Length: 158
Image 1 (cartoon, one colour):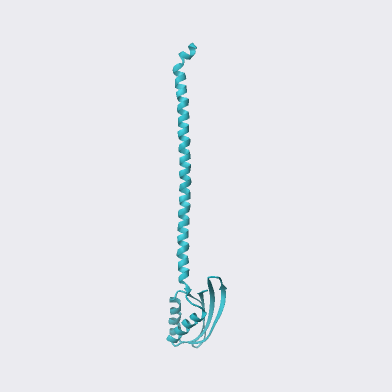
Image 2 (image 1 turned 45 degrees about the horizontal axis):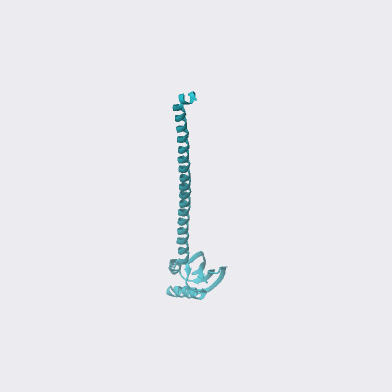
């Protein structure tokens, strides 16, 4: 008993130290939990941000693709070709459509045109087709004096 009284200050400091370590550990573990939770929320936020940017890019690409779709059927596109050719005094010897791809929303069609015209009229004709934004010129071949073979691909709305 005498030894307890003699060492009461040391025992008190030891007990206070143990209590202090216990309290510090509780505070630290609480801090670690909050840090992990915030870190997890930060990662989720970053993932959502990346997904939002990806979605925005996909939406922008989708809108660009929608602009490239011709608003009509094969016969409407044929009329556009014929009207454009008539304006430039181009003779369309043949216009052959061939379906490349058929989906629910759209149809991709290749047209092979045999044209009789001079180079300047052909250049204006092709420029006008390209300016619509829905026509891809795939192939152009000279087949003789004022004769050309033109291959275009157009996406038609189904």
